[in-house]
Amino acid sequence: MANNKPATGGKYSERKWMTPSKRAEGYAKERKNRVHMRGPHEGEELDDYNKGLRSGYLLCQSDHAGHFKYRQAIAEGKTKEEAAAISRKKGK
Image (tube, rainbow, N blue to C red; front, side, top):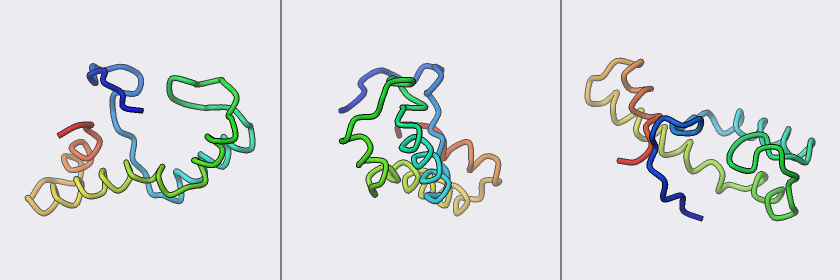
């Protein structure tokens, strides 16, 4: 499901990448509570499909993209703070 809305400073407009183990910890809490804890369905009950997704590899894709952008910015000579800001921007 593609979100065609522009990132205009809303609650979820900045990519929040983290190491896969930390992200997995958050998803484990969501599965245990059986409730969406972030995003547009926040507070709604998880269905079986979404419980399965939280266990899968697919939910780490944003982490990989953020890490790639971070390493690319560091290679260009940016500071760690600048690289972290660049890695969190969604889009190109």
